[in-house]
Image 1 (cartoon, helix red, strand yellow):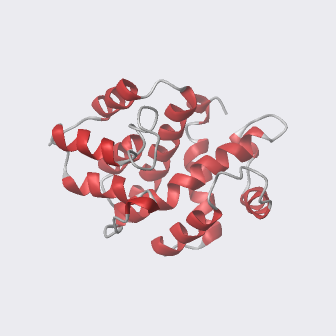
Image 2 (tube, rainbow, N blue to C red):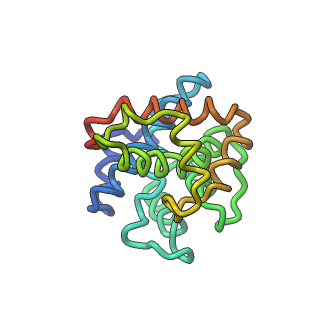
Length: 185
């Protein structure tokens, strides 16, 4: 199936209207593209998978539904099974193993993107340019900060991906800084 980034964005916005969720999707897309470049993979495909990983969340937020309903919708629309498997694997509760580098990367960047956004929000100017690896690591130690973000998933993601933790954080920060204007950060 040949799907463009524009078609993926249309699908995202068909199911998602909340700006915070759209910004999260854009952040994950940027991080996936950065890793695709780093690993010599298809940047367009990886970006689309990142963009769509939570497209069903606003309509189907329960653990019973997300991302299972999204996977059903993607299958109905003819999306490649490898993409769907990566999307299913980004959520621990699905039990879907992360077998591909794309799936491992999606899992590794998802929670971290949300956490970095939270760190940017508490910076004096609310700007991603002010976010540094050191500040992210400091905030990770504060269990009350962005308490809904799983620190275990962030660490496990970097481990599964086989990348240095600091380098991983830097890669994701840099990717998100590249779209800071789109994110309003």
